Length: 385
Image 1 (cartoon, rainbow, N blue to C red):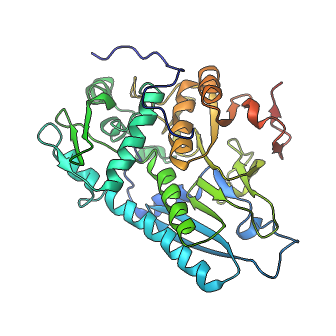
Image 2 (cartoon, helix red, strand yellow):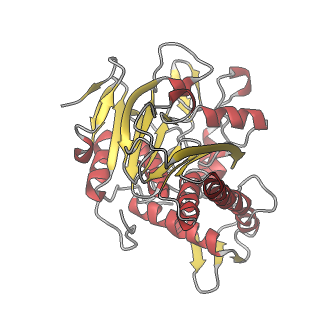
Image 3 (cartoon, rainbow, N blue to C red):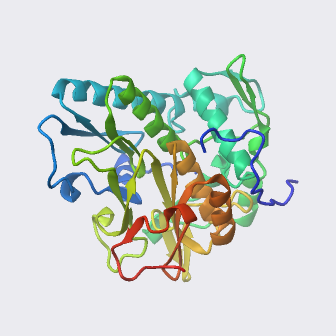
């Protein structure tokens, strides 16, 4: 039996340097729509373009979007050359595509699927990219003492979060308990010399959906920088990482989606409650409004607590994390949501990271390093003193 979790705020031995499994879609269209409803949307793209003035004749903004990793990805590049921008954009998408091939839980041919198939049997040799992703994932698991756990896949597979109540159900307690017994990141064994990964128990499964998009944004940024580009913004769904200045000479401005809109909309990402500037950082959000259903007055959302196997009973409805790297922001936004306001803020403060946390009373709580740096656009939300 696993020991009851105690949140560890101090830094682990495998300290992060510089700083849910996704439900299997019943149709690709559903997955695509979920991606469009991600917490963040770039205020600097499409209908939210803010580049009104100050553009130099030398630099121009080039943007392209594609569907990769079962979601909507956009790369925006600032460059004086259309050809250079095109090459950089292509390099960025190539990195995301490569990771999709390696890490896709739903693909029979991915390396993660190969590891899952061999659980309890034998180690599996993987690529350098998969090994690096797993090392970073374990770093986040250790930092959060298992609140973020990539082996939660067997539990998540029991749930189906849809607003269509005819297509939803609450798994039995016994099924959840059986699946939760397989959740333990400490049973992931990695041989860094041989590039091998082994899951100690049969039927254990990895799913990196809660961190892979942030990591993909990181790798895309690396590829774009290698092409000599000095400024770009990469958005893999709601996981965004930017560097350099936009064509207006400012940092990239991003918005945080309203977690409690007054009315249903087919474009919820347009409903922004706050904005801030991304200065060579990454940002990611987790919330209880992305995938959920309501039964008997209770909201069942997709952010599961690895300790219970049920949706986290958090006092928060939305968490945005700002960090130097996308994988850190991605993994910790989920973990902080599960931890709740007090413990979540303490964790972010101890790591020197930025956080925008919203409780069910629409109070906005900020880490110290973000005070005075966020603009509230919706009067229904107030920053706590």
